[in-house]
Length: 510
Image (tube, rainbow, N blue to C red):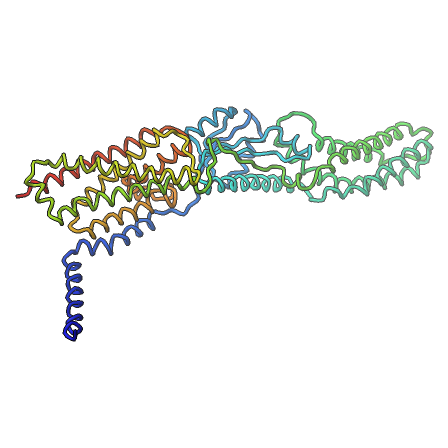
């Protein structure tokens, strides 16, 4: 008993020395463990671009509509997010371009915007997109609001440049002007030139007040009207015209002579002033019925999607989780397959047996593909029937993506297994691939956020193709994109040939 207690530290130190020796005699493993994750994080830090995405934007507006041109010009300050690609009057064709991913955003300019504003309604910008990412959808909705507010701000800057912001300062002056105009007409009809001159002077003062109050206030809608091509006399223009007539007629009565027997012409002019002021009061009443909120913010935006479904957050990330799990399982199984046989000595038996490298590799591919399909079925049951994640594109297309992803991922695993010397080394290589997949596949952030040279790493990973293909089949209900599926299978074939060459050389030794 005492002897065992004394020798225990020696045995522990022997195992400790052995493990240290194993680590030191595997310098590649040490470099992989230390430099691998660091290098991946470094490349991700270099490649990630935290910049606002530019949306290729197509505007839908009637031909020759100057209001649309003004609105596009007003949004120029958002050029870091909205990339102008043109204007079309055909909304249906614009949506088709959006579905084909030829543009990222379609903005429909509101028609009859001025009529909507005068009817106490906001003119609506309609934004269409083809995004599935809930975060991107939320950002587009936010961008639509910002764009509308930017237009509102420019519109207000345009109209406030014409004068004062107070549009109701005319009320007292208008009532006094109508009173003095009536008194002026009565005095002229009675031949009282002295009283007529007094009322004319008071009327002139009232008109000056109206020009300051009403004239400045009318620029709010008058500035909007200047962007319209309706070609008809609008309310602000009529109000300003009436005010101009009142001023001219008031000035015309500035010299009323004494001791005349007939002031009929002057009385008719005063009656015309009365009529113009009455009309002006009616027009101003229509103008004042517009609520301040509509007047200050005449435009707003609404966002819609042309995608067949608007997924939940869990729906959007489910294809990525599925692709990542299937890739990692296939790579791990493949990575541990041959390296263990080498360690257990069974590979020596295969060398002297009639089994060829091709037969051995195909057999392993078939067995692990079958096992991977079973695991994929279990995961699909969990995602589709338990969590309610949709599969809109058909089960055959879904299965084709699974087979392509497993085939290519197994290729990576077998190559790792053939270049590894120990189980731990193979596992570490598999973990490096997993870490790279998390950062560079588009699982965490979109590929657009990566610097293009670093993005090459993304397209070397099967999970990158798997995520996009699963999203298309499961969430969009479309066929697998031939270019993506073909590229995935092509990478798998290259890995198969590479693994076969390594295994053939390994089994041909001695």
